Image (cartoon, rainbow, N blue to C red):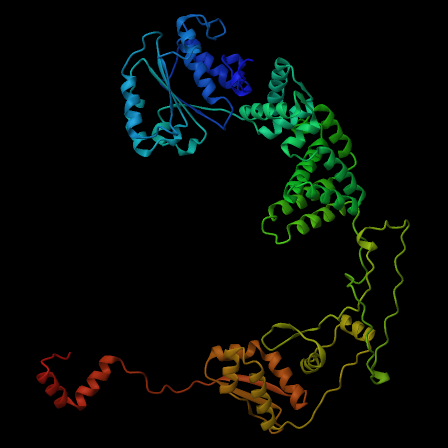
Length: 597
């Protein structure tokens, strides 16, 4: 039995023509070799598994080939090529910078650079993962990299170009390797499957290519894994089962349910996905990708953006004709928001279920309600007995609008809910500080009558619906003692507001009119006045409700208090004591041998 070699090693490219997905870059290297215009240092950058080290080896082999072909490839027959293929070439040296990143390793490399090649023209040094070199190693390498011997050529490969010093970058020709497209990966996998005698469905290879995310080495590793799992028959179902990937058919069925507004079916699909061990975020992310593919399927110009086989792309086109632009745009937005906020959600499953319900209602929105959202419990309002002549006439009921076609019954409408009477809108009054404050109840009506504000039509309509009549104005005599007691009582009830309670306990209103209807509060600062002005409506409503007189008014004035004795400084205190007790201080200074200044 022959030794098993993984596909990533067995089918590793050995010539430029066998490199997958880097056509433009490979052609540039071949042209440089053909013209003899070779730089002394190259930097190959790009993601993992796209062929950086492989191209470096092919490049090193080709420039030392004694009989290159007409298309710029190595002949594989000369001594240089044969020694390279048999891994005994002394002209090519590889250094793994991830494990050899010290100054001593670079110094050993510099010593090898001085030795000219025995066979061939160039001595090539390939440094893999060069970004792992230490700062000192980079500095030790700079001089040699800038002025190497004529026979030395450096090829450095890295996945993190941003970590390399600018002084290194400026001395190299940089080549950026791109991710390999799914089409190229699928073609290469199909070629390998035919070589190995493995039956592979195109859809299975497409899934492997998407999972590899542009890396050929990852794709070959996944290919070997699934080939072992399936015994040499790569089917679509076996592939998604092994890779733990959601079936695209699920998202087609889910989207059909959303188009029909079938929320129960969509929630059942989500529950099935969770029971199979998938993360709900994986579900919503997959659905977002599906809706994105539907969106690009609506236009033939963007159809090529779908990374799927022809059969699946055709299914996307068919389903896209059933979707409105609003469904695609808003559905993608809802799914993306859910995916973005998933980690911060406490009930993660509920957040995904809510997103599913919202997407299902895009094409089948719930009919608007006549009086706002309906709560879950009904409360029968109690009528208020008021004089008949003051009660406004209730507004006649408005007939429900007729529709030409019956509205479909949605999932949310199947839940039996009982309406509850909504509270009447709160009237807004303007206080002396030109601020609008919502008011309710008796105090609101009193303030409206005090300020001379006519009730709004909305408020009258609501009052008519609930049979509420504005109370008549009260004009009981105001006792100053009772008013001050109410003032103190308000301060005690709002003791949590320390600043407000402190000001009200310190400054009390004083009557300034003979009928005790006008009061004045003398304050000591503008800050105290601003604090009381901000709470004017609350305080005045409280006082009116206790003294039973709607004509009561309170004003706030700031009285400039004459400046009293100020605080003395330490120096002023010492000077005063020294002036009054000079003899005692002089004796203390002499007895204790101290100097007072």
